[in-house]
Length: 229
Length: 229
Image (cartoon, rainbow over all chains, first blue to last red; front, side, top):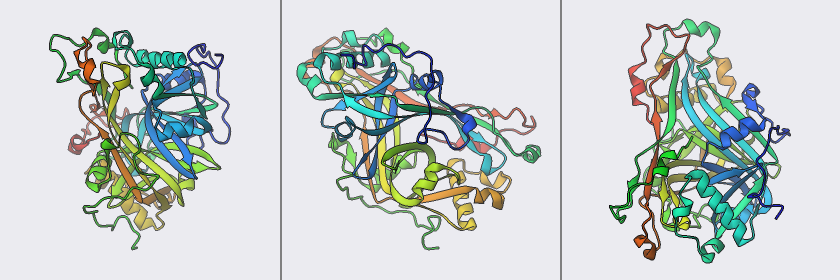
């Protein structure tokens, strides 16, 4: 079980070494390759986009993910075309992005977006043992909604069999982050044009009970701990 | 200029015909291929993820986009590796997704996410003439923030030259949408476990003026029209 991402120790400090494929080309003052920055963005997210190739055609699938040490994991139906493709250790790219604001400059050219974006490169493979898959699904659930897993009806062997969990060692990673006000041409600052940032963020609403839920069952306290973005 | 997406008429009703690459395989009761649904999702978004291939390696880049008729457009620095790659009419896939809620079921297996996701397939190419690029950039700005373009310092020829605008005819498209409460196994509804949906959404904050902005310049009224998600 040395390959188990579940038993994988927390990744320490360190830096990814960008190659041609992962080095940020444009506006590279916004780029970072250190694990603290990359994992800082990854650990705030829930949904990524996975890119993979089938017969020269790029495909892209949004999916939930989580991180364990230097690995990311994601899961889904064993019938998923995305999972059936990526688990074969083919090249994969994975992006997690947050959009934090519209940046309104005095010229169209300097309009921008404030964002935090991480792109990973690697090859994924499937977890195999039932115990390993079960532990991964528990870790995922507890990462998203700490406290929920112990309350749930336990998974059946059939459900675990119908679920594919893949893990990917992060071979290369880059973060690209823009923050702050617009960066206008110096002579444009005198123009009488409003400039600044319109903030964007994620809002988490009040839980909506299932219409079939017994009204005596209150929303659990752990829902208040759910964070995103 | 018959290729101009700017002069392109609004797309009417219709349906995309899914092929092997675009047909939704899993949970296909959530799938739709009609333009009303696909464009309904596209037109609420601002940011997409573009997937493309460089030497067998999938790449993925988040970027702003807009739609004109049956085409989507996006833009950026002419030095962008993504744009230099995709403008050569190579196969591209593009996804726009909104995540509307965490779906908490009585079993881990039936946990899900409420989402609206559209995936497009096509091949992109660059707009060439300066007037055409300028018109596209105006259309984009006015789509995102109606009223802003006329106020801005006009683009210079140099800026337009430094900007690549690509357009892609939508060859194939699919939408995949999940809404509503969890779908538990019938026998699990009796369990004393809270179930329901935790809504997620995008919040637009109060505009933050550029620190270098003249305090006499108030945020323009048109900022109130900005919508997202």
